[in-house]
Length: 362
Ligand SMILES: O=C(O)C(=O)C[C@@H](O)[C@H](O)[C@H](O)COP(=O)(O)O
Ligand SMILES: [Zn+2]
Image (cartoon, rainbow, N blue to C red):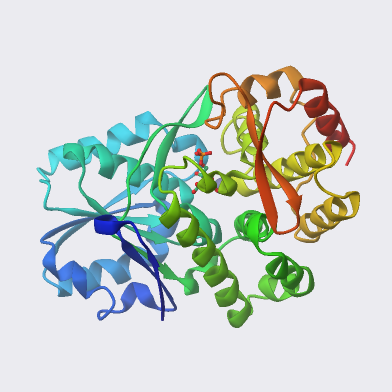
């Protein structure tokens, strides 16, 4: 079992990475201190893993219950948030409780946001079961729900007490969900680790064969990068924004198509291509490196294009609602090489249009 710390003074917490952790009484024994525990999961994930956890927590003497929700980005909204709050209120849960978010990114974001709001904040733990959640969304305390006008537009920074990653969960993941997580993995390598990028170029197949060592190495690399960035800049006033590479366009695609039509990682993949092309048009990165980025995303069978059903006007509407826009000015995370990125202001509309048009032809 590996332990990586997110260092945030009194809000510091560990990320535990290992296999079989969900039924490991030693690693989860800190839950013995909590009398009342609510596991919140989706129907699919609960079927696979909730029994193990319920049994373990009951053995610890906890009063534990399970709330199951529908899965999918289209349910990450205030309606489902209200369902969670109602469940907690009807169960008379007080501030001494703890919530476990057992599932992918949608469950993690939604449960984190509910934990932050219920009684002005109760403890929660992230138990991510998808690759995307294990390498990214469960770490760093970004919690949110979507609004029809924009992705993750209602939310707060609220850190979990621990992130517990059981790599065995990946064995039950659909290929499409797994691939979506690979987009965030590739993102990490582009923002700060050219060696990891090269490693992915030559070892991607091992990940798709579920090679345990390759998977463990990948998850660990990503968690380390994320823990470092979050520890230095919890609330994204500076370098944490690097983690948003590809997300300005990715979120616009998700919102414009309708939540859940493309998975988050799929949209981020195309978003990375637009950002890379803009960087090339600005003379920040070479054409060769952009080609390497596109071929790695293609090799992972991720989309690299902008759907023709989304007009440029529509795309721009969502792009301008991006959370990185400050004083009305768009700020984009652009790669300056494989392994480095920077935040660039004032990119003109014609340049964005040119990059988008390029992606339509891929
Ligand atoms: O943790 C972060 O910081 C990230 O930007 C990670 C992203 O991969 C993640 O999708 C995040 O939820 C996007 O945040 P948002 O602030 O753009 O909504
Ligand atoms: Zn993301």
